[in-house]
Image (cartoon, rainbow, N blue to C red; front, side, top):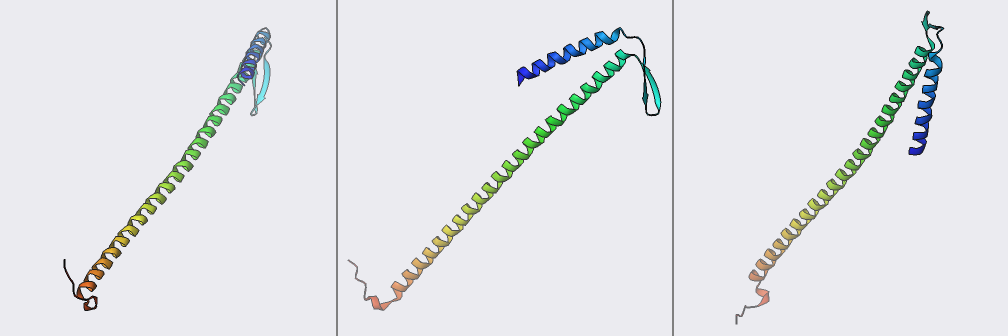
Length: 132
C-alpha cells in the first residue's frame, strides 16, 4: 500500500511538472464562460487553478475519511462502555441480592434458634434437666 502510494505520488508530481513546463510556453489566453460571464486566463493559470481544486478535493476527502474513522472509534468505545456499565450494574445487583439473601438467612436462623431456645426451656415434656 505504501509502495503504491509512493508510485502515485511520484507520477502525480512528474505529470504536474510536465504540465506546468508545457503550458508556460503558451501565451494565448483561454476564454472561459462561467456563471454568465467570461474570464480570459492563460493556460498556466488555468492549470494551477485545476491543481488547487484537486488539492482541495483531496484534503476534503482525507478530512471526511478521518472523521468517519474517528466517529466509528467513538461508537465502538461507547458500545463497549455501555456493555461494561451493564455488566457492572448486573454484578452489583447480584451482590446486593446475595447480601439480602444472607441477611434473611441469618435473621431466619436467629429467629429459629430463639424459638428453639424458648420452646425447650418452657416445654415440660422434655423432662427435668439434669446438670452434671
